[in-house]
Image (cartoon, rainbow, N blue to C red; front, side):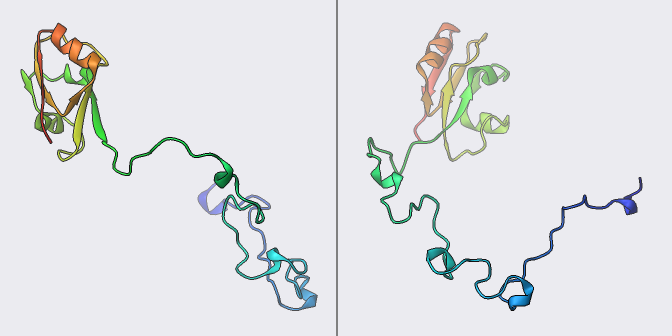
Length: 147
């Protein structure tokens, strides 16, 4: 088989349905929309979740809790990835340089996945409890940097 011999499989290309072009076309008069009612009108599309005028499920469900419009979003870094860096002091700039975080302007949180073998000082905006314990256990220090 060569490139010029390739063809679309049978049934892949359907003929376009021309609507409202007279009764001999087979799609004249009501143009396949039936007669009367909401679905026959122009601009008839309804939104997802529309239930025919009945109060939609999303409005019937009770609302609970609170979602902040301005959540604190952290870039997370695990101890496992920090252990690969050989420097004694690990700063946010060093993490950016090593590709552990994507932005220097966003907050960084250190999580406790992995183990530390060397005593290192880590600077970040937040630390999980397990990360703090593992850093102390390795003989290192953690410093909270203000944004």
